[in-house]
Length: 177
Image 1 (spheres, rainbow, N blue to C red):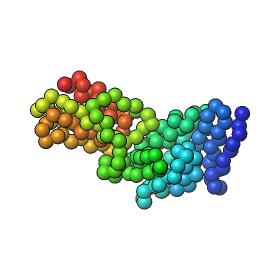
Image 2 (cartoon, rainbow, N blue to C red):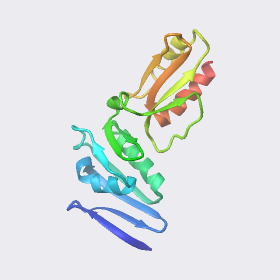
Image 3 (cartoon, one colour):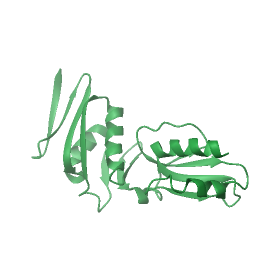
Image 4 (cartoon, rainbow, N blue to C red):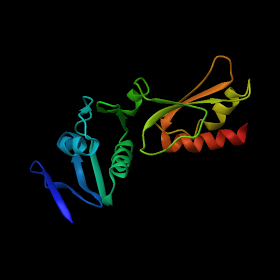
């Protein structure tokens, strides 16, 4: 049963929420025109870094819960090189390369959820002296937005990338240990 239809400006882009979930229908619309949608989904203010407001997104999803909607939006943005950084009080959309320098989540050598898709840093303990070789082995596997560093002691890999790719890289590194 539908109980809410929100038309976003004059773009005829809609978000429909009902007891079962949310439907998203965004076809090639810029981030600047989707601020109401993003604010509604995240239920907090959304800040878009300058230079990103003209990035476009395409999303079609039916009857998804709020967490799934956040993941779908974040995944669509990640394909455009835009990272979602969510805090308790706000959501920031920044270029993924800039997210490396922001307050992104740091994960320490453990299992983690890959959803919602987000940019994060994974710190992995590796056998002393093996980190440089492992870094060379995974160089081709991290995304265009990702980065890898080796600790000065040579016993840690520090990888920043999308969580879906961090999970894969973590598995690869486990087999290399």
